Length: 372
Image (spheres, rainbow, N blue to C red):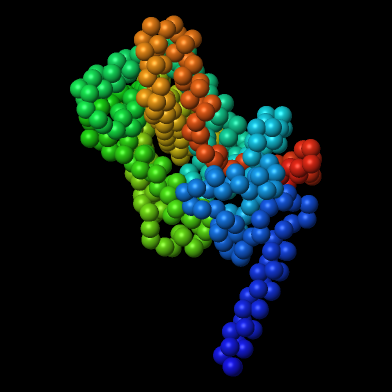
């Protein structure tokens, strides 16, 4: 009886603690949302690989603006076109900063163009957009490189002679080569072992980031940091890619001709020289390496993933394949745009950080508070 009484008392205490935590965890005037548990937050409600479906169900219950806790981090979820547009377009200046994303923060260390904030982000973004355009991104001058790469891709596809294969690797090789010519001034052979190793690390790193261990690291970074698992492999792979790109930067420094910049790295090195007397400059070797890493990763993964989805849609609609061989250019754009519209290519975006002061009401929904 004593044991039973002690167990009952312990359960009662735990229940009281959970109730108190739930009340304290719900800040005044925050959007509605499910109960949050100590340390775990809303983790029991988010079913690992099916997080997006879970968030969809929560939006049906709480509306398009609701709050969940990723571990101990309160996060406001925007789950409709209208509220996302209101935040990121209509009030975009108030949501420029990036929020916490522990795994990416560990890899990027606040450097580069994807996860940086403030003046660093403004300068690196402005420079990156201008330099990418100067080297042909989004212009007809880059079409020649794309067409050449497309021909190489077609040859590789024809070499399969109708046998079944996974096209993911080939699409990654083609996509990476297009961005590599702009960033590194270099095109790699499809069978170059070093190149294949880097692409493997990129693809596998993306998979590990989305794995349960990767998600758990982002929920409980202080605990997972000291535990073995796939998340540690993710960091190992990222650092290996960074070492590869750091060597490319050293090679460019050794062969740089100031009067004839060849690519993005050369232009950044020249900007570093111009700013070397500025103690507050953001044009440093560390930011160069991380910016190249960001652009290489983003340019490869997003394009190759889109190509795979387009191929999947065309396989499911063979009648469209036949029309593509005889249709004009606008019709060729239609399957691409339909794929992007209908498919969920990126299920959850990187977190944004609200920098506005006070609350904003969207219809009957609360806007994210500053710092969330």
